[in-house]
Image (cartoon, rainbow, N blue to C red):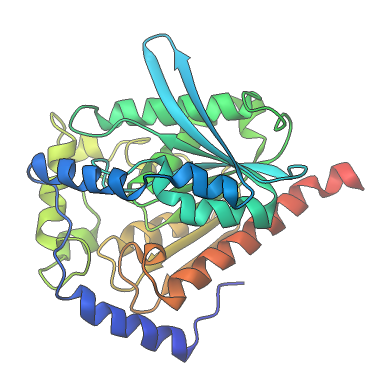
Length: 324
């Protein structure tokens, strides 16, 4: 059942949107802007591990290698027995962000759902291509599903991705299908307002200067800048553009988008195709901008709580045959 949005949540969000209307919009045109953003993000995270440990969560760091490919992973682990494992892929437009930026969601998820949350610290553009990021996320998924993390062997897994991480999460699922024994452990996917058409969906192409959070007119040029050497037909090939992939066999999914998100059509179209092969709960959040779960608004908090309930239900269902 989709999450409930009440009048108080909506008014709270609209007040915040009025502030966002005066804030700078995110764009990727020059390298120094993401570098500054990344430096500020890391500065804000000083002492994060200690705070989590004092709150009763275990924090682990792993480096996974396969030949020349390597990826760092950040693990949050609750006390007690585990009921599952979550692979989390952060957002940030492929140019900023890191695994620790989702601690505020992943800590409560670890405790409430009894899961180890493995966040992928994939490489960022322009030093890495999106293809490399996809390879790193797939490597992380194989490590998790092959039992690389102690105490998780055989447990059901959930894949979570937000924004650019939504693209990487969906692409990872498409590629995992080649490993049937691993793919069978995926109990569900949670996708927050991802980019599923790398050539630009209709809502991206229509985005104007009145968008919130994201710079509407800069979005299509940014997608082209991030995928050099490709024309639109090449950008729309799966798994780079998950919207055009073969979705047969995909797990149940929980998807979110916002009415004011210029990436709205990406989720609407993916949910429509996904629903032909498995259950999809689609939440189109009224008046919500891109990135709503990061903002200090009741609707964002409610979405995170709803996700935790959904994950707990999926894990219980996945384990039901074994227990009964």
